[in-house]
Structure formats: structure tokens, C-alpha cells
Amino acid sequence: VWDQDASGAPLVGPNDATLDGNGGVYVTASGPWESGPIVGKVYHLAADSALTPVADDLHYANGIQLSADGKLLYVNESEAGHVITFAVRDDGNLAERRLFVRLTALEEPVGAYPDGIKLGPDGNLYLSLGDGGSGNDPSGRARDVNTLLGKMIRIDVDGAQPYVIPADNPYVGRSGRDEIWASGLRNPFRWSFDGDLMFIGEGPGAEEDKQGLPCVGRAG
Image (cartoon, rainbow, N blue to C red; front, side, top):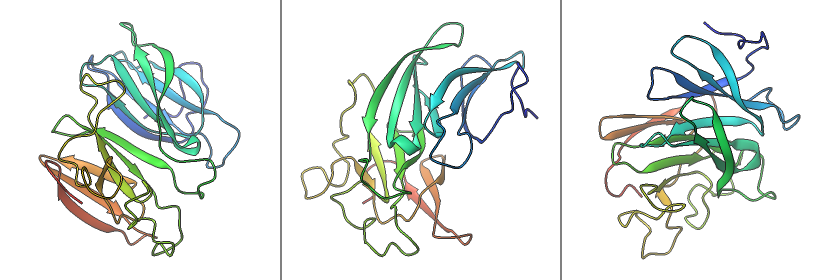
């Protein structure tokens, strides 16, 4: 169990991890649950068990995924409403911090932020966003297919810069945002893959609704 890094600094708010492909792990740590100060970090836990910070000054780091080729690290900055990337060096350190995609606007409500990012078994990148509302989504954002709030989005990052929309996303060629893969979700902040199924835990409180969706083809 690690509660501090190699320098003795405390590990505050660890929340997600992704394997580095070399026997180690990258971990996001958000810092305290508040909009400031901006103290989120990415840590690298090497195969020799040394935990070191490799990126800092992140606005609530909350979700992390290594690309299939191991060259890019995707990181959610939840409070900033966007995803950034880092180039992964051979020694495991990070470089070239860049904005990958902005998912929410500054004027959108608290809670309307990205939380969760994973590569699916189909090779696409999945990201989840909360609806930003109170219980039962009174503003109806999760059901509004013209906004990304309360949705699971699905994008193709295999060789595309920065990405393309999979042709079989459910709203391609129809009214609605092309990035949407699944809609009508409350706060889909806990989810995982099991084979070709995605299991989503989401809800307004402790009692969460768990859904299983096929992660190939259309969801809707």
C-alpha cells in the first residue's frame, strides 16, 4: 500500500490507473475535492515499486489511459472539462503536454465533467461525462442528444489526429452529436469492460443503477 511518493509527499486522491506495458502503472491523483488549488498529479509506479510524480498542476486529474501503442498517455482534467495527452518516454517519464479534446464549456454546471476514460475491446476510446444536474436530471441533459452531458462518448484514436468518429456510432448521419455512444446516463463515473460488455454504475446517490451494454456497434 502506498500513501506517499518516493520523496515522502502524501498521495492525495488516487482514483484511476493504467498499466505502462513494462510491469509498472500510471496513477492519477486528484488532490482534495475542491475547485482549487490545482494540485492534481500523475504518478508512475515502476516495476521496482518506486512511486514518483511525473506530471503535476493538473486540475483534478481523474481518469487515465495508455494508448494501444504505448506512446501516448490520456488524462482527464475533470475540473477543466477536458482531456490532455502526454508523450511517454522510454524511461517512463512524460513530455509534451497537449490539449486533446475539450468536452465541456466553462459556463456549464458543476458536475458536468469528464470522469473515466478507457480503451474498449474494439480499439476505440470511451469517455464518460456527468449530466451536471441534481437527482433524476431535472434539466433533461442526459436525454438531450445535442449535448455531451450525461453521455458515454466513443471516438477512434487509432492513427487519426486527433481522432475520428466511428461510422457506427448511433447518431452519425442523424440528429445528435456524432461522438455519443450511449445517452440517458445520470453520472456514469464507475464503469468497466468485461469482454464485449461495458458495465456502468450510475445514479444520484448511494443506490446506483448498473447497466450492461455491448461495446461493439451501436448503443444509443
